[in-house]
Amino acid sequence: MKIHGGCHCGAVRFEAEVGNAPVPALDCNCSVCRMTGFLHVMVPHEQFELLTGRDALTSYRFGTGAAAHLFCRHCGVKSFYQPRSHPDDWSINANCLDVPVVLAIEPFDGANWKQAKANLDVQE
Image 1 (tube, rainbow, N blue to C red):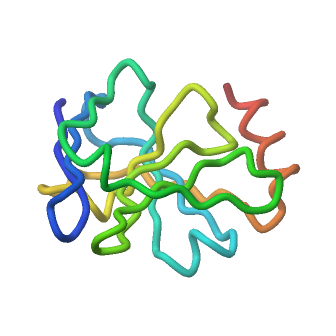
Image 2 (cartoon, rainbow, N blue to C red; image 1 turned 135 degrees about the horizontal axis):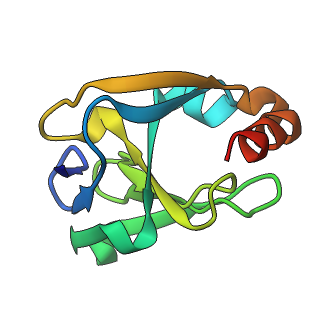
């Protein structure tokens, strides 16, 4: 299934290919995701295309600096980013999709990142 989305002002636009509904999503409780309401839909790099807005993106890094939190410099919305937990995927914010999709939401204990990542690795 093809999904489309982007930031609030429309400068950043993307499309991606995901499986059929319900689409797996992670609800992370780390400080950034909790404060911004980010709901993660993981998409392999090769199944994601940034359509517009490359020049509108600004990066924010903290902690280890491994994750590249990309947000629109015009409206401040983070519609997708490069997560530390999934280095081969983009994480799309389900709340930034043009048309909502049915999600299968699982919690991700990002507040206790090392253990949460270890649990993910066991599942894969």
